[in-house]
Image (cartoon, rainbow, N blue to C red; front, side):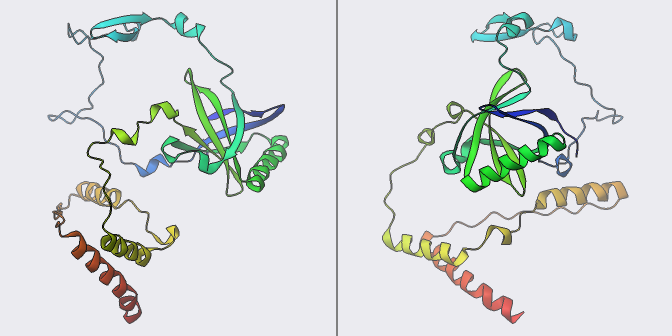
Length: 264
């Protein structure tokens, strides 16, 4: 596993040399290249002036902030240099909080954190055990790509996991969702719905977390490579039925499942 970032975790006067690793396996994603329809040649990404249609070189492009429709202020590299923040090599922990205080909508991307060297491994291990014993998570900031980004560190399987976070101001309010009405649930419907939830209650480890679309798409690609016939599957539209009928039928189906397994 190759490190993508090297620096320090810092809280108060404690500094721990660390390395950051991608926690997500990008190999699980199928990506496509754009090709010309005739000849199947790779299509290049060419930057053009949208008004004149002329192609542009990198040095002919500047950054502009649109403050009114069609009106831009140009921001040069020297302007960006004036607002550079603290070191880009330090994750500065500002405090330790309970995990439930951080809303799930703020979580963005996970990364593995590892110690940078044998000496750092002891302090790293101490931080991991401290987080585990205290039940707390560390919240801080790091400068990435000229932007101050909030992060969270938490113990995970004998190591430390870091999440890049969104700022709370970036998350929209649920109240903005259309047609959210204050509807009182029917008592009988609520009772049946709770019964259904209870009958379907299981552990997360027993639920299959597998990308079937990836497998199906990979099978099509492999078949095309082998020159085989492609067989497509038509997905049926789910039927909309009365809520009470659906709940009762779902509960009956959930009750039958254990019996069918035992029979098999």
